[in-house]
Image (cartoon, rainbow, N blue to C red; front, side, top):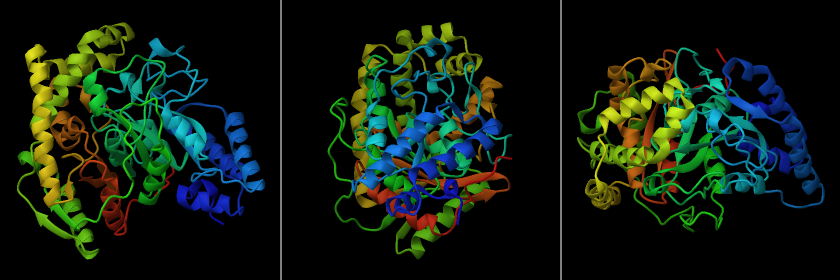
Length: 465
């Protein structure tokens, strides 16, 4: 029999529900895997085996009583350290928040529990969840299990590394500028950034976010299979009145034409030949599955969206966040925030309001485009996964990283969903593609991703290099 920690969430939940394996057995196997490989990658930075086993026992007891424990019955998962989990500090990678202990679960964590998931531990993030790399002065650095010389991505680098290495079947992540999609890409798994309002989110340990963060930040799942993303999305997206942005949109929308737009180099950005090949391969996989794929020279604006995203986000960071960055004195956060300030001058009130007004126009352009092409196929990044910590070596290096990440940074301004699909390897480096669809059409993304996944993905879970 396959080792339980190797199974997908979909297969494991079915096995447990049929009582062919117990939730305790699945959790024990996942905890043993954590003990075996986490010291090499530092993906999980806090865990309580006794609490995990108690949660698993509760699932088994519910099944014994003939009750339905939920769609994730007994499935081990991880939660990012920037989400409130009762009894644990919401550190967000900060020494400043080492004692900030949550007294209640955030909505997404509560939804995972209600779905029957067993929380194995809490995963690492860069300080302030600020980078596409994962290192901080409190928890240390997370390493990519496929190649420690490469970034595991960020800010959900711990979630991606853990999931790729078999520490849990689904990882919780957050995304305001690629923080789910890029770690999935870098670690050779899949990651879904849902539409704003699809998955409820809120931290009682922090004040409500300013408007830019409210419009752009989301929680979502990372997993080794698209079926697991589908399952994770359904579990995470249950209603919670604590998030006023939550929207009761159906998980399956109306019928749509299977038509996709392929854009190799949005706005003429440089794209590595291995990624170009992966995009053509993904298009061929879609075509074989009955999709009509049309290559287009241009998409609606992404560069302007990325600039406005930085305008809104940094305007808020300058209202107290910069003081916290100075107090934390994390070298990486200081460097990255300084570089970002150089790239995005402070707006006045008129410029801030102009950015919000322009957002509507840009979103309209994208929605009209996605009426014609329900899926846009594009790079996740213009570069293969970066050497670890390449962003803090110099301002010029940071600019190169930013330029390559254009396809990720533009979308959050528009609150649109995006999905990173891992398709293979280029030498030791994972490679994949990004899919984009209209608001609350994660169902289209998942259907297209399943067609691409059927053509092959990197082996997973993997033993850390």
